Length: 261
Image 1 (cartoon, helix red, strand yellow):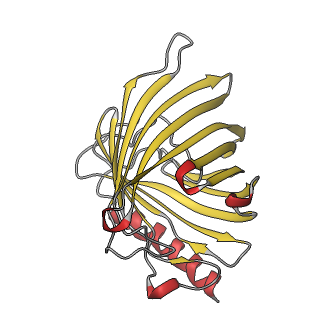
Image 2 (tube, rainbow, N blue to C red):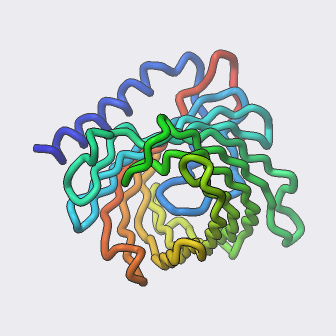
């Protein structure tokens, strides 16, 4: 019943997105469900959303949602949030929503003449309250990332490194986080694509070392909507064992005329 309700919520969000489009939508630029982001940005002047469900083998549930706006030809602003989170099959301390994260990604170099495109990304996680638990750290976190994306024939590759400054509750200091990822993706057949990523998240001060891989398929249900499904497999003790990921990315247009990329 719980999984069915989450699936219905996801489909309802997709339908609402279709109704919200005022002008012609643009092709989507999905960043989910991998750890890394690539250098693409939402089509200028349009809104885009990503919504998904993550179910892990220990009973955990996550519902990541991202709202994105194309602020320019190479700049995107976004808001990440998870309206419902369960750890080990239960919502801890009645806290069912994760802390929101606001961010911006700017591509300062386009791909060309065999050289990859490059971008920077900045994010700030804002705690909903000052209490730390399994869902919230209770303190703000800041992140800065460098991204490069290139082509390998019909496929594409993406390199990602992010430095995070993780705040401790009640002014307890800052811990450094390092996130690294290498991803590959490409089209398999008309409307169907595949992706794979090897990623690591390291927090030395907390003795945290998570190494995992994510792989799956995408399906274009239209020019402006893309569904995805995949598996995340843990390769270290801190990464967990297995998680199922399903989701959708849709561009819903904007308040003015748009042109496709």
